[in-house]
Length: 340
Image 1 (cartoon, helix red, strand yellow):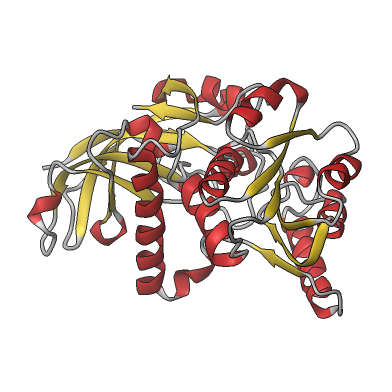
Image 2 (cartoon, helix red, strand yellow):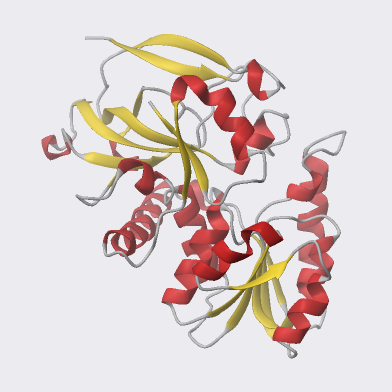
């Protein structure tokens, strides 16, 4: 039996008001697949770049955006465990999540703990996996260390701050002055990014920091690297500073990655990495195992009340344009969530 799904279409490089509400009939899940009734899907920086045609490897227009989601399994195909029916699950999708229903490979679904609100759980999917893997798999920061998190009030940043504090790590977090109180409440020492960030960090950590997590890129990446203590690690995971630059969207990212590679070749006793959540997808089985393990670890901390979800707003799917405008306004802490 087919299911009529409501979707938000990104027809081309458009302003938020150019997003379109569409409908599509979905066939029953094939073998190995499951249909999910979406309860929450988020607006991340990826979608903000995609609508500008600036996301590094986005699909050609038109397409349905939506990097991640949380929902309930309503139907399954052959060779899928029947216990999955009726379960609340999460999925990392990259695109397609801005919909009322979606058909996915059952192997990509991660159970959500009972009692965890759908919108709150949604804020921990791509943000939680990104933060966990950068902190524990890439930088491998240990208790007692000091780190710098740029954009500590954002989706990834606020999750990263909490994960680090839970692990006994001191956190310096940049944000605007209006978000300083929220960043402090998460357990970080707030730094005004509009001021002299280098001077502020040096005052708090004269010997440098053990890791920097930078989604901004641009010229500021040089300061991030210079703020590292010996044997420290820079993890770059975006280039927000160049999102509005004209020309080929891949060039700023390639230039950034090239610079990080060059720094690793120098005898400077510091490390630099570019984090891409999809980098391990070539080994599909390992990729799925790590995503499930890391997201489950984050969910367990959230269910235990150790991590607090930062839901900036819950907005109906049909009002995706308004939600996108809010997410891009720079006035919110956490993540804007679409609720079909």
